[in-house]
Image 1 (tube, rainbow over the protein chains, first blue to last red):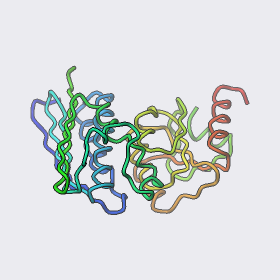
Image 2: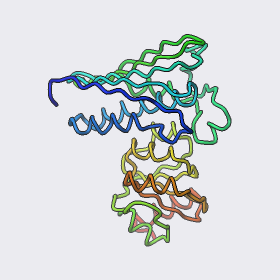
Image 3: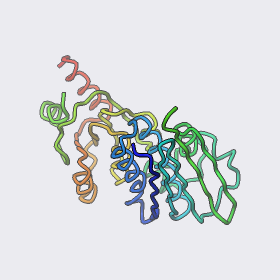
Length: 143
Length: 111
C-alpha cells in the first residue's frame, strides 16, 4: 500500500433502500485494490454498512467520508436526522426503534451499533436530538 | 463442491450468476445484521428475504451463493443487480432446513 492518503466521499441516498450499501461496497473495492488484509476489509465494510443502513432507516440518508492512510481506515457517517435520545440504550444488542416495514426487510434487529463496535478498534457516536448523528469508525491496519 | 454441481444434483434452479464458487459452509438466517456478523466467506446462505439488500450482505460476507427456499419468488430488479454483481442465487421448493441438510449430505457423500 502506498504512503499517500486516500479520501472518499459518498452521498447516502435514502431512496427505498435500493442503493444502501453502495458506499461500503465502494470502500471495500478500494481497500481490496490497495491490498489491505481481507479480514480488516471485512471488519470495516461491515461496520460501515451498518452505519450506512442506519442513516437510511432513521435519518433519510446522509454522508460518508472515508480516509485511508497506511495506518488506518477512518469512516465518518453523518446525517441530519432526528438524533439518538439515549446512545447507551442504542448500544444494547436487540434494542431497536425500527418500523415494522424496516423489520420486514430484514433490518431492525438492534444489532447495528453493537456490530459497529464489535468490528472496529475505535467507535464514537455523537448525536443531538433534532440535529443529527455523527458516527466515527476506525480500524487500524498494522495491529 | 461448486454451487453449480449442487444445483444440478439437487434440482435447485440457478436464477443468477455462474455458480462456479466452492461451498465451504452453511448459514441460514433472515436478519441481515445477524448474517453479516456471523456468516462466513464461502457459505451457502439460505434466506427467504428477497429484497435488494441481500446482495449487499452477500457481497460484504463474500458468500458462495444465496439460496431462496420454499418457492419464494425473486423479482427482475434483484436478478438484474445480482447478475451485475456476479452473485449466484439459487431457488428451491425445499424449506431452509431441508436445503441445508440435503446440500450438507451431498457434499459429505451421504446421498
